[in-house]
Image 1 (cartoon, rainbow, N blue to C red):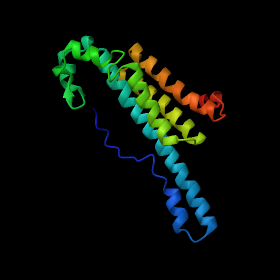
Image 2 (image 1 turned 135 degrees about the vertical axis):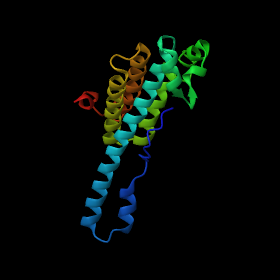
Image 3 (image 1 turned 90 degrees about the vertical axis):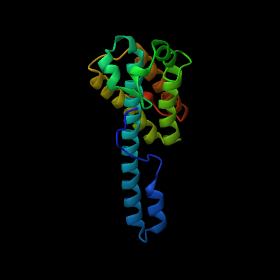
Length: 177
């Protein structure tokens, strides 16, 4: 896959460390609040990058037969050039049970957000926004409409996140604004 060069740990909560070392409650509260805001923003960015990579890769594989040999040479999936794939291997990867199929790809995207956010409503909403932003970025990188499999994947990933937000008593409509 593509190496973005980003190394962000969305699960690191530096605010908790600051609480242990700060000598002033005012400083501690400000530092914790600021750190959690930064971490939430980083989490949204990480969700965006995760979604972008997942849907872009899925789209490339789904359109394998339409790609030129030159394009296949320049694109890699898991460090293997697409030119080394057979049409059968590409089809199996995006099949219902395939690693880049709707079920497994949407689960990886949703699990990233759900694991990183836990029961934190703000992080869930930021993660959901990150999914949408990553998908929009994948569309732009693709040059327009992605293959249908990508839309089915995002719909399934968002449903998992929306279900968690609803389970916690949140309003899904608020996440779209």
